Length: 440
Image 1 (cartoon, one colour):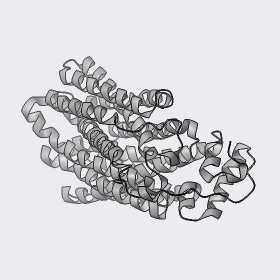
Image 2: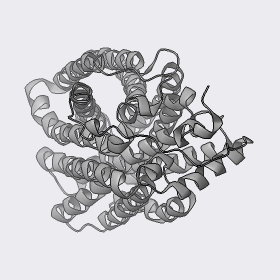
Image 3: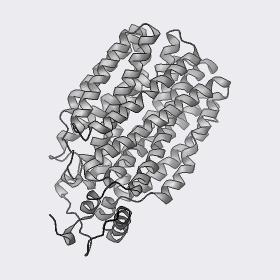
Image 4: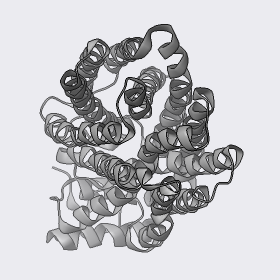
């Protein structure tokens, strides 16, 4: 047992129970996460509408999706670096503002070129927000349930994606301006950025790493008061930084970085290859626009139980095993979708894919910030996400030629292979269940 006077900020946070203050942090970050997902999810519905309304070719439609992911690739890398320099909360609020304003502007697009420019800036904000938010929540969550809390944060993605599917179903088919109204709703993050900036705490671990110990002490005491725990006497003890690991490619970290990047790349390729194109692929296979968007909404709802099971398993099985099992399940679901021909089997395979894929995403987001020390945690998470976004750029562009070669079946066979590669790479990640973040 450590002497009370020798407890670090991390020790004091890790010993706390989950309180209402943790819940406010989780929900506050989760709302931003859901708004993120809502924006990304709207792209699939908008692609279908613009194909008809503007007479876009499959190649042009692909770029509408891919340019946003190009912005996300840049945003994730830059956002992670900024989070390690100016703070997690600051970057989180800034990214919400950027992509909220850009989404509102995209609703006014007068041409494909204008839409592509606005979508790039939307992606810039989106890409930076996700790894920063997961890092912030991970650094506050009590050690024994840290993975579960981060998966619950990721579950807000399903809420946002469901809202996107609902908006697509209700607004996009209403008329020529339906897609514009759907994007206008996506401007809400610009308003929510003010709430984040004022209402969420800055990461204690970041504050200590920057020598801002008085601010860190104040935040830690607020969480201790909320938990009814008496704070220890004496000065706050700072963690001793390991300067040999100030690069994500340092010898001690390079193996896990390489494995993590492989998982992120393959999961992004499979996820965005499938879910940005499912509405359009359903229409191409003979479904009406309304029926396609209805099926997309039902498939999306299967994400929620996937997250719920993942949140339970990451603290029972651990992050690595949970991630690999859900990825293998995603590969099986993609194969089933490739061979489905009846409407019922397409719907069932799509729901299984949604369930497994989003369970994998939850475990991946839980594992990512944990495997890096505080000094490089933001940039490590951001760099992995940024590298993964390269695959999300390629995936929408790869779908049209795959459809020409072998139809919808060929698309999902390729996605299944990508899921299988991700499952193999995940086995090289360190298991951090029950470990302190500083022991990464």
